Length: 288
Image (cartoon, rainbow, N blue to C red; front, side, top):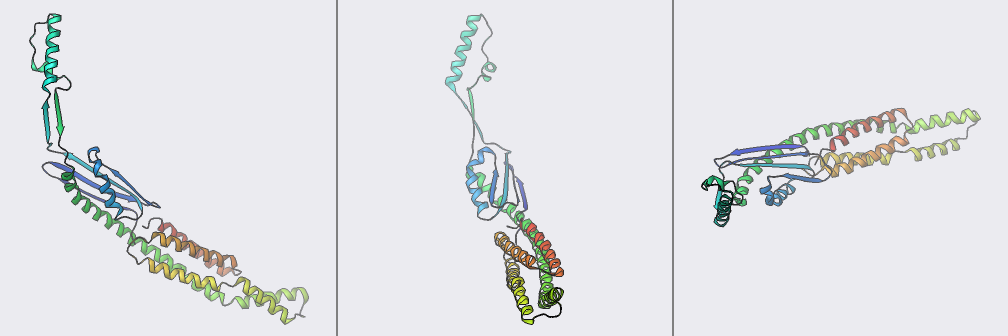
């Protein structure tokens, strides 16, 4: 069992680059991947998205990659034609205004377009640097999700045992249902018509009530659901949706048992089962 909540981080600094990779996730009904990159790395987003989507099934996953060049590969170019044009215009301006100061280099350096710089952006070189850090950060991320998933599983199974314990109590009480109806029906008949009670009418009424309030089928289905639930929790990952569905089925059977209950002790056990199931459903919101 794996939790949808996790965190992983890795950073590295070389002579040329500072690089960090951070992955974190929270619960979400579907897989929602958010990737945050420096703009010049945007072409790598499809690879990063494929990396995460092939490894995570559900949850909101946020990936942050920070990259800083410590030694930039910067090239500067002189636009000769633009420089010559600026020089000619400045000389013309000086001549027309009567300025005799000679034209110097500093007059041209502030002009736009004379010097042009370009940075080398080798995406494959960046990807080769990112990939090992991405793998290490994801290992940390997966470890935290497994650890939290293990704790969640332990708590869920504890509540499943609680439901089983209450269910055992209901099965014991269920066996007393016939004697309960017999006593109740005889008492009602005696209140109305005294001791002249026709045994056949009493037995018919008891049989009708036993059919109406029988919970045998619900108990069998509930035990089957609990067994399946425990079995599925042993799977490695991707069990969240299956367990959600089973929790709904368990809830349906418990509700039916509660609606058919005519004994206080059974109703009390139903309340206990509902409380344990609610704890389970709360935990399942964070299971992948």
